[in-house]
Length: 350
Ligand code: SAH
Image (cartoon, rainbow, N blue to C red):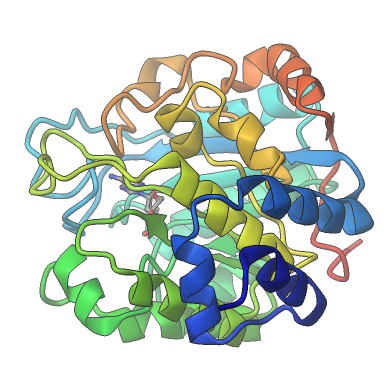
């Protein structure tokens, strides 16, 4: 049997393993150090010690979807709903820009109030006022025409986690009517239009198996996205998955390291969910190849309402306004924050 350090070496050199080899690596819980060393070395080859910051604006928690894991799902009557106005959003950008942010991420539920015209209007205004900034959207599954319209209005990047690449697993996490194929198709369309795209999955999601994770890795190889967002599944008390266990720290870190070796130039966030799972989760993520953090730039008054999972951190060092504290933490982990657009290497625009 091959040992994990030989597998990690092979993964670093060839960016790939067989399914059987991935399985061995995923079940070995003694390879943290050697994986971290390799993942960190590869991230340094391409990104040095830079950690890019993105200002995250959660602009609506209305959602027409009913994903079983998500705290802002349509059926959650306990969620207190809000949506920001165009002026609120521009105010967030103003504040973010003054703090030094050069990427704004607009994330929300799938809220029919935000028609394509309204979304395009918001994107155009941000683009006009902050032309040196990247605009990232994370607003779910739309038509090709909608994606094209947003792109023409000035959006550059799109985050749409595929959640799971396995059709049967997808069906256990989502209501009938939502489809794995459609979500994957959206990602290919976004790529074709010219967006830098981000996919990803929750680690430790209910019913997830090792084979599902390997399918996720294969799907990511096929898509070859510029960004990959992964974090632990965390349960929310008002969802059907309230009694499922949270994903575990070591599994998320393991996957981060594997992804860095498979996709050396990918933009890989140390996510809010990772920071919620463990107080040093994001620092540990950075030391495992992650190179992006997305501080919260939403108005304080709505932050606690965008509760995707229980206890989501939103007012401490992950707050955009606290970015000096965050910068210190990043430094203590051995890296430094960079206030630049931070496109994926090879995809620098402008
Ligand atoms: N409506 C957008 C944004 C969804 S929220 C979209 O469809 O893409 C962003 C991400 O949060 C989701 O893609 C999902 O992976 C993650 N998420 C939602 N609920 C979660 C939970 N309970 N635990 C961990 N991550 C969760």
